[in-house]
Length: 143
Image (cartoon, rainbow, N blue to C red; front, side, top):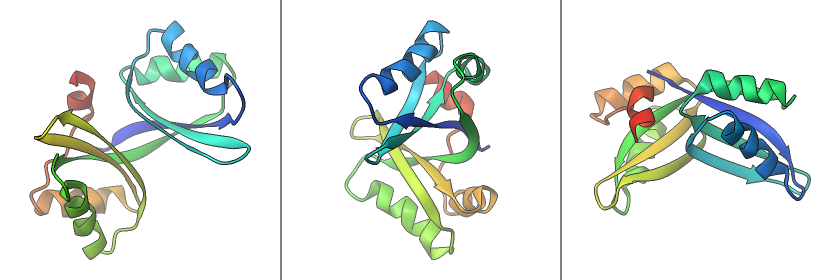
């Protein structure tokens, strides 16, 4: 049930992020989730989109280097400590968390955590066994 995420380097200069996002927009690709981590010279943009193949074509046509990675989408309660409880399940199972980002699905009720972990299959298994609902790619596309 892994979710496919696109990751790309974006120069840390005026207009670079807008250029990448315009490629998606011009090709009818919508964002479902996005995060960017920056350094002095570049950022790593990570996105989940509603049309992965369209996004890949757009990036290739614009000659933007990218990768496709498997991530886990897990439901967390939209309360203080909701995400922490999900992360603790992974930590207790010895699964390393490389990074995470989250968004609220229903305020005060549900949030969705995107998790890049050392072992996606094991992470999904541990979370499922702990009763954490996993969010499918189809469900994310309906948000």
